[in-house]
Image (cartoon, rainbow, N blue to C red; front, side, top):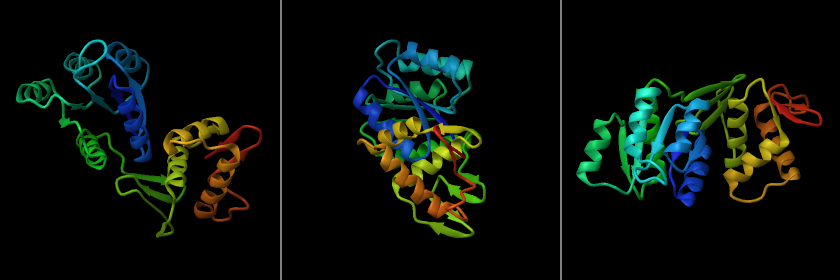
Length: 221
């Protein structure tokens, strides 16, 4: 699962963009300024950075130079500064793309995937124990047949794909579903969605092999 660092000091934009990208199959982390972004980059692995130019501290141009020099990550500028000088300056510093606000979310997701593939970081097809997940097209198939998953079922499946072999606690899953849905998701709702997802991806939902229950904790993929 590709990890994207969003560096933006507008909290509303950060929250909505993060929720959308998670729905599209990406994992995100957010920083309001250059200092916080540098701290995250030093501790965590990322595949791409989305940068605004005007930040709470530092600026996007300086951060772009740091990211390209120290980590070699592809960078996309996502900013309201669309004058020719800013565009040229951003590209000259090594940015892969420059997208002006306001942007169309689907177009942004598509351009992110293009940049990731060009950088050799994109993974559009995921094999989840025989279930095929095409994150480019948002299609899930089993035994050659496309599965009809709801948005939350798809998000749950991507979380399990991302964490194969690990235990995901119910609290973690509830938190992720809440972020994605934009509304409260309770424990009973999670149980219902796990049951529905198992009915679609398991050979025998009564004896699940792909999404197993870890009693008292959560689930293991």
